[in-house]
Image 1: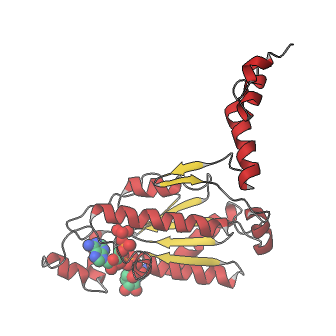
Image 2: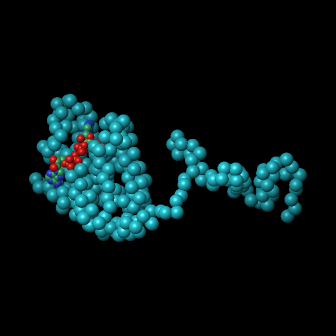
Image 3: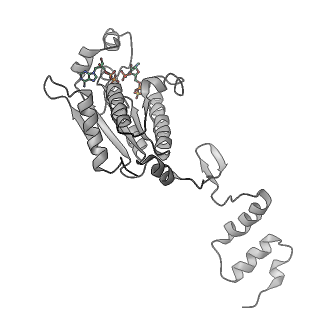
Length: 255
Ligand SMILES: Nc1ncnc2c1ncn2[C@@H]1O[C@H](COP(=O)(O)OS(=O)(=O)O)[C@@H](OP(=O)(O)O)[C@H]1O
Ligand SMILES: Nc1ncnc2c1ncn2[C@@H]1O[C@H](COP(=O)(O)OP(=O)(O)O)[C@@H](O)[C@H]1O
């Protein structure tokens, strides 16, 4: 093939582009030429430059130590155990029992509890629907980082809306988001009322309380449903064992 150099005159790096075009290399050229050029100028591979939300011109930085290395070190697989249920259903109690049971087995877990995260990272958020959604989104993103660290992350928050929980599920590889539904009837939760919040909600002193005047959407396809049978409730340690059996069966307790 003969190259027509006249078309390249005065084109600089773009001359190289038209040269490639004459060779029939069309598609990669816009990336190839300008990116190699910028790579030389900026000393960075910006081929995977992205815009995510309001963040423009951002580049993912990869490290040579990855999730598999960390899992090997910890002899477990990072995942997220997402405990959802009404206030008073026993989410925090189960999270603690599970964390302890894993600890005793030499497995590293960390709890992200809704109440606790609202003391810091999410202290700017209220209980209106969009703030709950943002609360859940942020906890989902943090949980994803913990899972990437190789840790068994236990997220315990009401997370009342199905759509928000599904969005968190979609952040993780298939299987790594384990939704645990504490299926405890409202009247049981209300009779427990350890913080007196249901009483305040019934008296109209708290508006938009989940289960009273704000909805709770039960999971449809959760991995584990822990049901209250009749008047009896499984003990927290029995519930923790149910979750641990699931983790064992799915291979999360080994690298
Ligand atoms: N309006 C209203 N509705 C529900 N819960 C309320 C509300 N106001 C305060 N609280 C207390 O906040 C805790 C729930 O926080 P979460 O972050 O888990 O909620 S959510 O996932 O954003 O819906 C929740 O804690 P738990 O009882 O441990 O679930 C309550 O103690
Ligand atoms: N499995 C259980 N059986 C009986 N009572 C429980 C159980 N789990 C939790 N509780 C009690 O219910 C109340 C609410 O538990 P908590 O873990 O704070 O719920 P949540 O985090 O969902 O609001 C507490 O008083 C706790 O002792």
